[in-house]
Amino acid sequence: MARILVIEDEIELARHLRTALEQAGHTVATAYDGPNGLALARSDSPDLVILDLMLPGMDGLDVLRALRRESLVPVLVLTARSAELDRVVGLELGADDYVVKPFSLREVVARVRAILRRVEAVAEASRLTERHEPIVLPDLVIDPATREVRSDGRPVQLTAREFALLWFLAANPGRVFSRDYLLERVWGTESCVGERAVDACIARIRKKLGGAGSPADRIVAYWGVGYRFERREGDR
Ligand code: CA
Image 1 (cartoon, rainbow, N blue to C red):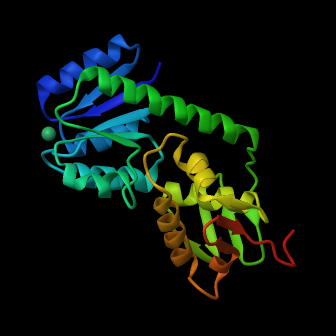
Image 2 (image 1 turned 45 degrees about the horizontal axis):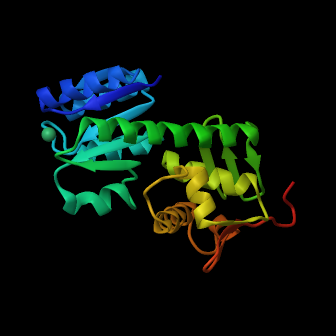
């Protein structure tokens, strides 16, 4: 069914996870520390990553941060530290879901199934409106093939999520999208991140585009509603 990477240093637990996931029909790769996990995530492009937060070599939060800079791969976090959860699942780190230790294997398998289902639903929806040509506006260029963004001619580095959100808004200019809808399209339908994640992501995009007085002004907020990407005279 899916190719899953398990990053977990407790060898017994990693083995149990592997067995349970394989019984559910998945193919499983295992890494026992952060650096190896990250290397496998890069080389194998798994469909989903199960990531323990307490890891030797490299903290799980750093692994998550590194993953999120380069990919939208769904991440299910395993943690014993419930105090971290807001940060992990919510705003800046963008895990897709979490389970708190101790957990049942059955619960993990169910969460994995739910995540994969919603990722597939979003992918399906995206395919319907797929376009690969760059969006070229007088002040802003967005190229989905290379993921390059130029704001007033200046290259802008966006994370995969930030790019996906900007791309979606700019590909559908003039329409107001609710935070809920953007969550569904960019994060997934049953995602556990809240609407504040959309606001935070928009704020980061705006800042990177150059803030007020820059092409960032094209992203217009409708308070209590959502966001719209503004068309302007001179746009094609
Ligand atoms: Ca651990």
